[in-house]
Image (tube, rainbow, N blue to C red):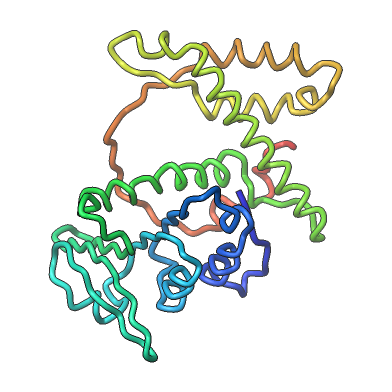
Length: 255
């Protein structure tokens, strides 16, 4: 994972363009990366840069994006955007039958990459969104107590370390008891919130070379008994609330 730190005056699009030069993307092992973007990112400049760098991309757009996209009716289409003497071919997947228009733009033109394939790929973003939710609401990533850049970076990386360690404990323990989790009527997973809370409480012991093994085993044994049902195909209407409601110093996780 790579990240960019800037002030609030720099937007998401500029962040995205900087990250396109990340070594993690450029030094690919003989394959082209596929990058998924949400609605806040699309622009003609971004698409042209993605094309120049040789990436595959799938972008969700608003109804007021490029004219060649806006003019498409519902369904699957291949269109061309012409700008300043340059032409870029785009695949457009459009569905405006619901409450909110669903418009996807990509450079995926293979025969098997139909509407359902595009929707399947875009749905892969959900795990990323839930991870952001975890970082913001469980780990309180944005609730900094430090005032200078070094302190803020230190808190951020400490929060990321806790999140990554929690994810590693969860995945490795679930693999260890996979058969037991899938044995009954329902499929279960270990409770992510419990693990994050436990790791946050015991982080000093977990990074202590003298006692981390015993404390880690204790944590894993407790986590095995705290489970939640996996409920597939759950959909909730998105509730928009002001960012400041949950972003207070008083709810900072103890790091």
